[in-house]
Amino acid sequence: MTDGVGLYADIYRPRGAGERLPTILIRTPYSKAPYRDGRDSNMKNGIAFMFAGQGFIVVVQDVRGRFRSEGSRGAASEAGDGYDTVSWIAAQSWSNGKVGGYGCSSLGISQVLMASRQPPALLAILPQAAGGAMRNRAGDVIVSGVPEIGWAFEWFRNHGNQGSQTPEKIDYQEMLRSLPVADMNERSAGFPNDWRDWVIHEPSDPWWDQFALFDESSRPNVPALFVDSWYNVSVNETLDLFNAFQKQSTTEQVRRNQYMIISPTGHCQSESTQTPFIIGERDVGDIRQDYWSIYLRWFDHWLRDGQGDFEMPHIQYYLMGANRWKSGDSWPLPETRFVPYYFRSGGKANTSNGDGILSMAMATGPADHYRYDPADPTPSPESIRGRADGSAADQREVDLRPDRLVFQTEPLSSGMEVTGPLRAVLYVSSSARDTDFIVMLSDVYPDGRAYNLQKGIARARYREAYTAQASYLEDYRDPSLLTPGKIYRIEVNMQATGNWFGPGHRIRVQVASSCFPHYARNLNTGGDNATESATAIAENTLYHDRNYPSHIILPVVP
Image: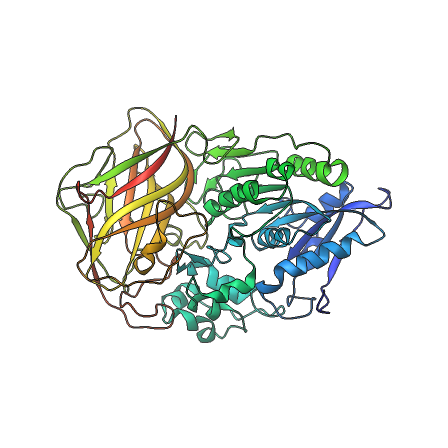
């Protein structure tokens, strides 16, 4: 690297394919060693052999501070190390001077960050589940100013430490319930990592600038094929990346050659060949897509020929419920109508047995109240059956909790497609100086099963960040605590989905103040939620009348 640190890589070269070949670069914090095993039927480990078998050189590199590579682990070096590695590859005698990037999650984020540096030899990337590269996602750890601890703490402890140490096993559910959040690594005897730093800094803190995360000033100049899934935690940010690369790339040809595939799976599972595919507890049918042929065509086009545009629909997405693939050319889909559905009740919307109604018609009526106790938080969907990743789970049990408000439509007389970004507008008050509001969208089947589709969170102290004009780079202004009892307008970014609500199904929206352990709890004190342990109970109120029309905005596709 430019600073003298040595990064180690394995190089896979196909026999008999010629002397100067295109290269696919994979940069990983999870060790390059498993890629030597080509027996994985899902190509997770066999990917290097597969690409090399098709005439590409493959370079699999341990990132800085992990396994064989030197230096200290840290996201601040990702963009520069990627640039230096691409430049090194292009200078080798076996290289044709053309490099592509490949990989999922951290490996996808690495591609986006190095693309922002514009290494001349980087001619195509294929980032999967890379929404964490966005400045407002902070590596997928922070969403709307709230740490996503359900998976992130385990990742930092196991994969974000220096070197390749394996920490002792612990009960993560028990550890996540302990406070303060910032000290969990020390309490669990984890090896040194950046967990504390990532959860104690405010979203607007200049401390984040060191990581060169993607924002409106980034200028990539490389064709990208983004891949993600509806149940990944940052699918909306991946879709924002797709739009940003179209808008912010420096040449017209690159802007034209941005593509997206969205599957109905969880994190880094898009290429699954399981049929039917079960995402958590929901059967979404035959999701198979010809991924590997698409990927090979992608790299063949840009790293061998490179002439003209890549021929493929710009957007391919799986419509859950209808269980079929669809396509489009821009995001949101151009025919989308953003339709407000209003919350209504007689003041007793607590639980699915309450009187909460979701309707396109506004109405007057009393507000709904619920008590949020951080010591007894509403569980997140993926924790109901002990899972840590995003997935679908039947919400009927949780919908019986009095700390969750439930609003739903009458059974639909005809089907309705809801595909696109989701947003909710809440009018709320609280007895606390600060609290959270979580909004979830669910599909209720005729037999009563209620599968979560998406959710979003808003921390009240950051309410100024949420405006109708908010871009993908959320503007976290100075946090401002609540005046107890005062009514505030709060917007909730609910990510995105693609779902067909069939005839007889209901659209259900749930409102609560915790979704634990996916999101770290708001302790309701108005203090530092990362470093403090004291909690307070919040009496929260949701208003829904003509003066305060709380609603969700659904992207309806005719």
